[in-house]
Image (tube, rainbow, N blue to C red; front, side, top):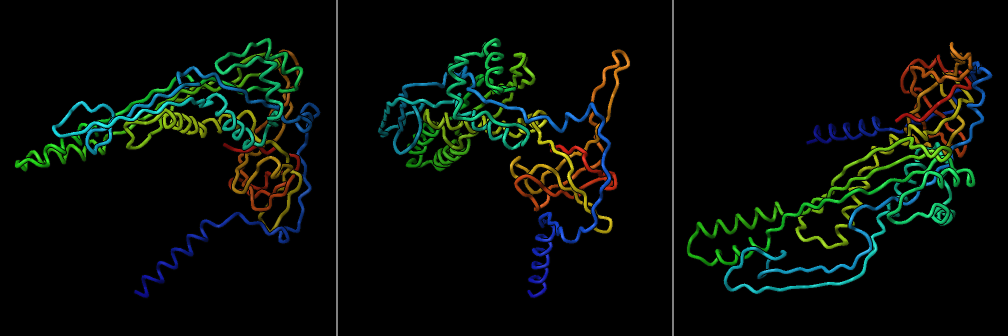
Length: 374
C-alpha cells in the first residue's frame, strides 16, 4: 500500500512539473544582445502600419427561424412522453398541451459577438466600436435579411475609416428528429400486464431502445465573408456546416431548436479563428534580446493590449528588399526563419517576453518581426 501511495504521489508531482508554466527569471538574463536586423528603406513602413479597423455587421438570416409566434403542441399517452404516438394501446389516456407566445431569436445579431471575440483574440485588428454599430446599420441600410450594396460599403469605408467588414449568411437549418417514446410507452403499458413473458420482454426492450435512439440533431450552414471596403471586393469567403445534438429530446420546443442552432454556429468558431488569424494576426517586433549562458529570450512590442497570453506561439521573420525584374519596382518581402517563440508569464500591457520553443536562438536579432502562429 505504501509503495502504491509513493508511486501515485510521484506521478502527480511529475504531472505538475510537466505541465508547469513558462516562467522566466529576468534577473538571470543579464547580458544584452545588441545586434540588429538590417531594415531596407522599402521595408520601414512595416513598422508604421496601423492595425486595420474591422466592423462586424448583421448576418443575413435565410432560414425560416426568424420572428415567429410559437404554437407548441405536446401530447402524451398514459405516462409516456411523446408527440402524436402512432400506436394507441387500450386503457390509455391522451393528454394535450398547447403554448402560444411571440419570440424573436435574433439569430442574425447573435453571430456578431462570436465574430468580434475571434477578432479580438487575433490581436491584429481594431474593432469598430459597438456604440457606432447603429450608425453602420443606418448608413448601409442593413436589414435582418438584407444584402450589402458594394457601393454603400465603399462609401461607408471612406467615411468611417473601416477597412474590413465581416458579414455573411445563415443559409439553412435542418432538423432530424426521432420520437417514438410515446408509442413504445403505450406498447409497454399494454404488454407488461399480459401473461406472455415474451410480450413483456418485447415491450420492455422496445421502451429501452426508443429511449436510447430518440432525440434531435440540428445542422446549420453558415457562410462568412471578409469584405475590403476600399474596393468592395470579397477577400475571404467560406461556408461551414456543423451539427448540434439536443440529446434525448424528441419533441424540442422552438426555443430549444434556436438554442441548438446557436450552439452549432458556435462550433464553427475554431476553424474561423485560424482563418481570421491569417488576416489579422498580431504582428510586432523584437525590442530586446537577453542572454543567460546559451539561453536567449526576446522582448516584443505587444502585450496584454493585443491579447497575447502565456503559451501563445509566434513565427519570426526578417525583412528583405525585392526588385521586380520587369518593372524594377521595389517591394518588401517577409522571410520566415526556422524559429518558433513561446510567450512566457512575463506579459505587461505593451510588452511581452518570449522564449525559444523551437529552432536556433542565435538567429534572433533586434527589429525582427514576430507574428502569432496558428
